[in-house]
Image (cartoon, rainbow, N blue to C red; front, side, top):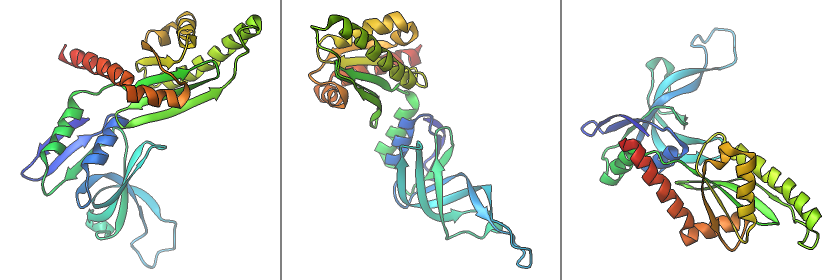
Amino acid sequence: MKIFRIDLKKGFAKVMPESLDDLWHLYNIILEKDEVHARTTRQTKPDDQYARPTKAKRVPVNLGVQVEKMFWDRILNRLRINGIVCEAPEKLSIKGSRHTINVTVNKPITIVKKRWLKHQLDRLKKASRITAAPLTIISMDDEEYCVAVLRQYGIETKIGERSKLPGKLEAEKRTKAKQLFFKRALKSLRETWVPLHSPIVIIGPGFIKDDFAGYVKNEAKDVAASIIGIKGVNSAGLSGIQESLRSGILSNMLEHVRVADEMNAME
């Protein structure tokens, strides 16, 4: 989170979210009846009542709204803030009407509160100091894999596949099928990892997770360099990820990432 300015006497904070986690922080900081001011777009119609009817145009404008409700759109990665327009250029004559401001990553906004609480300010300042990387997780056994991203606000399931491998008595078939299974799993892992370049944890029951880690090291050294842990759990897929969260395995991995980030920030 980038903080441009905080003025408690005037009750405002001008900030810019720099990650999806920052949107989550704003979702928890902004409350009903707060004001949010930002650059947005608004439909306008010609002022001249005698002019030929034309389609309304959407133009950029600086607006402020008094917040009525918010919706966090995880599909489009934006925070939708709906409210009553409290500040706008006079020529638009839209004060008192409703408007929705879409807050996205790297879009500055100004939040105005009648009173800022200590925990809200602490949350803003903490978000501005350290931007912890998300964690990419692949949970697998010989029947399925699931790739997900763990962020501060929860788990984002990205992709998964079920594919039962032949039994150990069919060694040749199993080896070929396992190679194809690993190839597809690596493709899914890479597609999730590339936009983030985040730390990777491989989890699952048995030895298949270790075999897959070896495959990644041989086939994709760039991806392998981001692996920070290979951990055993009782289940694969999404249930394995949830189990690792409950057991504290992923929390320990996140702590490892957080400490590394803090050390880098100090350097």
